[in-house]
Amino acid sequence: MNGIQRKGQDDAKMKDGEEKKAISILTDSKLSAIKAMLEKDHSIDCILLLDINRGKWKDAKDFMREHHLTLSDGTFRARMIEIEQLGLAKSERIDPLKKLYKITPQGKKVADLLIDLFDKLEE
Image (cartoon, rainbow, N blue to C red):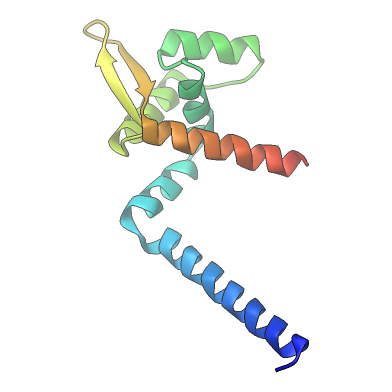
């Protein structure tokens, strides 16, 4: 077998592996749920806010305003509920109407991967 044939086989194996990964992401219930959540407005913002300990609405709002960004109360709360349902955050009630969300180890993993993704896009 010559080098060109081997390279073609290696490329086919790599493509097959990438296709299997894509199928897994698109069909695995846990991964597709995370993918669906990340597609929604401000999901990445909320995960990154959790990562920097801004899991309370007032703290998140102040941070976003300070950096001239927008995020509504309703969107923040909706995303945090979804993030918590996926196991990426845990909430604790701080009074009858307010919750504080904290990132879980799985949420930290997602946040770190998102940061790595954006770092690589900047290269």
